[in-house]
Image 1 (tube, rainbow, N blue to C red):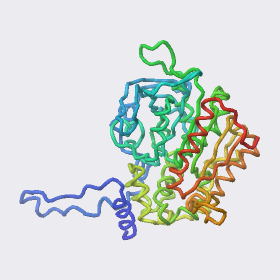
Image 2 (cartoon, helix red, strand yellow):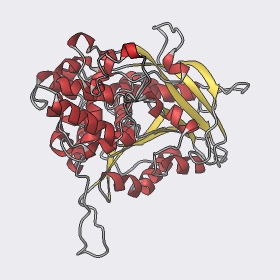
Image 3 (spheres, rainbow, N blue to C red):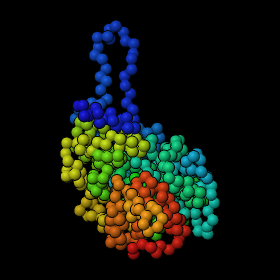
Image 4 (tube, rainbow, N blue to C red):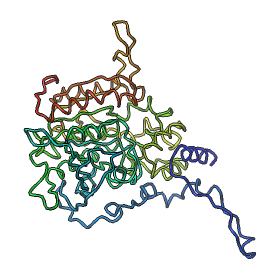
Length: 455
């Protein structure tokens, strides 16, 4: 019990939603003999019969598209626009905003079950010089969150976007059409690669079909499409590229580039580098996000794990990052060994990006059809002038060899991939890569031939 309280309290202090504590109240004399409130009630584990998957899902969203979505025929094709509403995004999140809409879109989760997602579509005020139609970029935000109010459709219009590297601003300044999808879906399934990738593809489908109210036709029907994302957004980007030929084959030749940055391709590799250190808050949140798509993980939670999973159910990226200040390993949350438990290993294998393994539910045709750039904070990048300069620190949490292996596996499978090492560790690399990543996106969007890949 003491361990449960300490770990749950540490997670709350690190930034998860605060727990309201009972305050002093005036009670009638007849109530004076009643038992006082239990100050630790919020930190006590639930009895076994209450440990249903719903206990660990995010709290209801203020957005009715999340809290009470419309009834939809489950046979509705993925990518179908179900509802539309205008949106305005303030300049501190997107300058040169222009016009915007949000669309409710039919999609599929990791298990082919229908679900609805939300995408934000932006036509910036910056004109496109042409001569080809304005390209469309799917910008896949580093959501890294477990709560529904952390989704881009809520944050961009209403809060300050903490996606600090200026990818979105630069894309709008360059005049690209933008689609920004809440790819974690209605369960905020952070790190659930298959569902995240499908959502991105359905957001692209919807954006290409979307006709502004009163408009003559779709804004982006003839546009080249490129996608880019980093870290948690890299998960969605990489999986969208890999799933596209099977899940959205009509986008072959339309999705002309995928820029995948800082991607954790194999979560099993990261136990040694992210578990039990400053990265443990994000790793912990990723495992809890996976459990929302694979609820067979929930029975593995210990009493401590039950309390922590419940308290973190609405944590946004900043809270999950700060959770590394409480660097408790996953073994604290379960009574099994996460490294060897067969249930854990199977879920991680089904969400391994790269080589498509039919033994774990993958289709051998899941190979990116368009060019791919894989970029990563790499220790081989010089950080000073001259041949004697020292090398960069590299990414200590998601080692560069995992990104190089991803690029190699895609190349062997027949994709056309370029690996781009950038300076810095996981945070700094998001900034040092802005130039090379967006220049690569720009070339693909403008139809510049891709000649530096492996094919």
